[in-house]
Length: 141
Image (cartoon, rainbow, N blue to C red; front, top):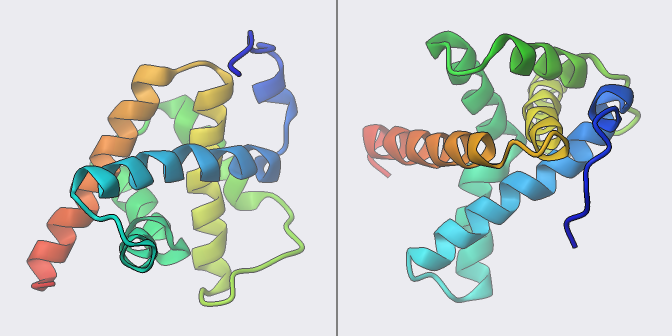
């Protein structure tokens, strides 16, 4: 399925298109992680996945990444491109600000996929999973 990447495509696409791809890229990591935890019932999987992939979770992750200096300058630029992109849809359970931050988060993963930055995707996805789980422990979930 993976074909050579057009090096200009990642630069040409708008933030919404990058987020479209990035949503799927990040979700694959979360789904694999949940299966590795031993979850197998669809209802269990969906309920747990929300902790990682909801707009609220993604906004928390991107804010934490920015605060901790996790992202490169290019990734921050891509986040801004996704966050600031004109979107004609909105999340059902999130504020406009949260939804836009989530879109920026997903745009980073889409950009990394199109630039074939596989190791960086894995690094950020693992960081996200670890960060969400640490936050849940801190909250006593």
